[in-house]
Length: 408
Image (tube, rainbow, N blue to C red; front, side):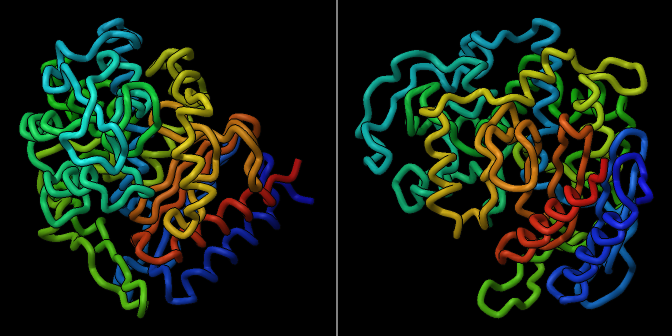
């Protein structure tokens, strides 16, 4: 069997065939897939930028990374930990005074004024592990607290734009916590809060600090919180197909859309745009223990902290419930078990990927993971949102086929 640094030629051919099947079905207009192992990188570009044809997908197509922003944006906080400008068990009040003196709901579905005092202040560790007490809980939709989070524009993807950071913090500070600090993992809001924390500690914008300390050293020239006008032709429209009819509805246009100008809020939870090669550089750096071309970006210890499970079974209960009892909401995503800092970490083998694989997926049709056991990186990018299961099916088939292409 001919081998290509551990990928079989037959396996890579099958990978292309499986991806092509999704594009030819008409459900996925186009995609860019990058897989690497050892020193070898293999890229597939299939389909077009628009669902009705037009320019072909290219290796340098820029995608909205959505929640796949989380594993990358967390690196800014890790730099501050490495430099002892933050400590894991520092109380956040000096930088985030809006979160001092919290009240906590008696029950998740309680009225907003039915609270008890927080048992302790919120720490940096709580924010970085997504356990500070507020977040998206898809199993609690319709409760007063989640309604209040949506009404205040505290999460992206709503008709209401996310306000600038100080106003965002003011609105966040008006709400009680859903859980006591450190008790429960919760999605999304902590990843955005990390960006505000980094900006306040450094006295610079979150994006400026990320650019200087992470993006520029890694050569991630197409990564940021918006797409400049001279590159906008490389950004496809983003579709959120109608769940009933499958009709391709444009959720965000490239020209004049949300990513065509700098946002008021630089969201670490879902705001980045990037390319397959930029993300490959970042995940290879993590696989390499924080080094990139001989230059240290993060300490090995910081990388190990990010990419291994940080949660107890109790903290992880809500995540387990979403993955096992609400597969119809998550399209089967979130089955990895654990969570590190900013990313999922596999703690049990539930599919073809081994324990220790780390990364995350995005609701705009993005997926990026690295696997230390096989020294493997996989990145799959498309422009179809998770209003339908098609992008999740594409991701699943990509990873299933990729692992069969390992032939050593």
